Length: 155
Image (cartoon, rainbow, N blue to C red; front, side):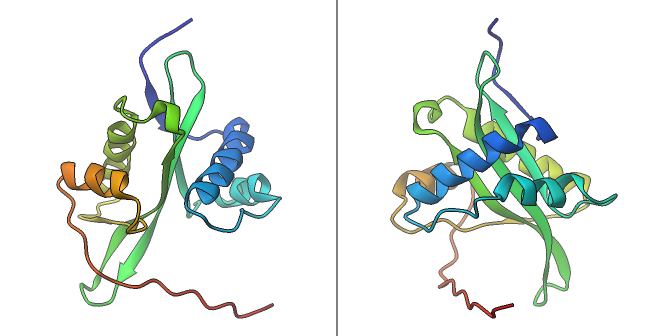
């Protein structure tokens, strides 16, 4: 059975595939792999509380295979004095890029922002990822130059 591509909210049964896509995403971005128990961690963040903080959307190719995902969370901007939606991850397996699924995922992310009453979505992508930069610019997004830092604080 084949149908049109679909973007929908992730379900618990999607979590192993989303974790696998996150592993592929990290590999693509030349980053360390996600935690081995990522599917369980995502399950807690997405489905483990009455008001989950994280939102996850999945892209299904015609036929139903989950081939991409986007995760987002409401964050605060001190300078603006308001919340915005932070797009944490957006990834499509290479064989399914250029088919409109990325735009469908971004449409779903902006719909999430509107549903939360948020006027803006912010995200980042590596500067070397020229395909992603072109994609986001075609959507009308504009880049802001910053350097991202991380600091491990231990447990």
